[in-house]
Image (cartoon, rainbow, N blue to C red; front, side, top):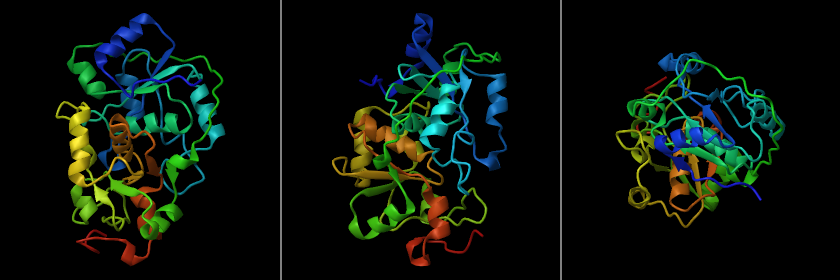
Length: 292
C-alpha cells in the first residue's frame, strides 16, 4: 500500500521532522519565468534548507517536446527521482523560493502524485517563511546516494490539447485557468514571446495568488471552498486546471485537493500550446492583436 502524506506541512513541522531523522527528502523546486532573469539553481547553491536537493523541472521533463517542461516518461521520472535518493517509501517535502510562498513547488507536488507517489507534501509559506521564522539555511550541497524508484503514471490526471478541444462540446469537465486576470482577459501581455493573452472558451479564471495569504501560506480549507464557490466551480464535478505552462495551475490542483477533490487533472500544454494550435475563434481575448 502506498504511503500517504498530508498535502501541506509547516516549517515547524519540517524542522521537527528533520530532527527526527525519518526517511525523508527535501527538494528545492524553485523555477522562475525567464523574463525575471533569476537562476534558480544558482540561488539554491547559495541558500537552501539544510539537506535539500535541487529538483529542476526543466531537466525532469520531455525534452523532445517543443513546449516547456512537459511531463517526462515514467522511465525518465523514475531515473531522475532515484538519483535524488528517493524510494517508494520516502516522504518527499517540496518548497520553492518565490515571493508568493508557492509558485513551482505545487507542480512538483503534483508530478510525484501523478507518477503514483502519494508520500509528498508541500512546505506552506516556502523558503521565505522558513527564513522569516529564523530557521537555518545552508550553502552546503548534499550528494544523495542513488536509489531505485518505480513510477506509475496516472494518465487520467493529464489532459491533452485534443481532450481540451473535445471538451468545448462535451463539457465533461470544468476548466480553471490560474493565470492573472489581465492575461486571462487578454489585456496584459504573456511572459513568453509570440504568444498573445486570452483564454479557452468556457474556462473560469482563478488567479493562483488568490489561494495564498500575504505571508505565502495556503488559505484555510474553509476559505478555499468559498473561493471555488464564488468563482462558480463545482467541487463535486471533474476539474481540469491550466495556466501558461502547467506550473501555477497545480496551485489550484492542490487547493482543490485540500477541499476534498484529489483527482484534478492538468492541461500539461497550457495556454502556450492552446494559443499556437487553436483556431482564432477558440482564443477569447478582449485585446486581440495588441501584444505581439
